[in-house]
Length: 100
Image 1 (cartoon, rainbow, N blue to C red):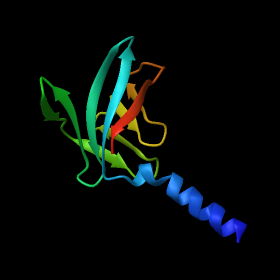
Image 2 (tube, one colour; image 1 turned 90 degrees about the horizontal axis):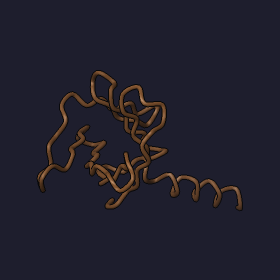
Image 3 (cartoon, one colour; image 1 turned 135 degrees about the horizontal axis):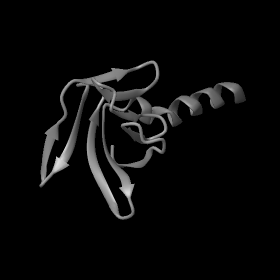
């Protein structure tokens, strides 16, 4: 019985990975951040610019590795670690979900 409860808890705690839409704040400098709307159902990512959502083009969703990227792979959003990797910068930007 404890094993079954543990397995159920594991699936429930991983629920954010399968979320359809989330709003992320990704910090790239001290006190500077970008806001993104990430949707795994519509396979889309939008960034907030002057109060409007601007949708990025050619988004690819890698369901196996749980990440989304633009077609050239220059920006990668890791849906498990909640990080954004930009270009060849070795340190990922930390992000947090601000709205499920």
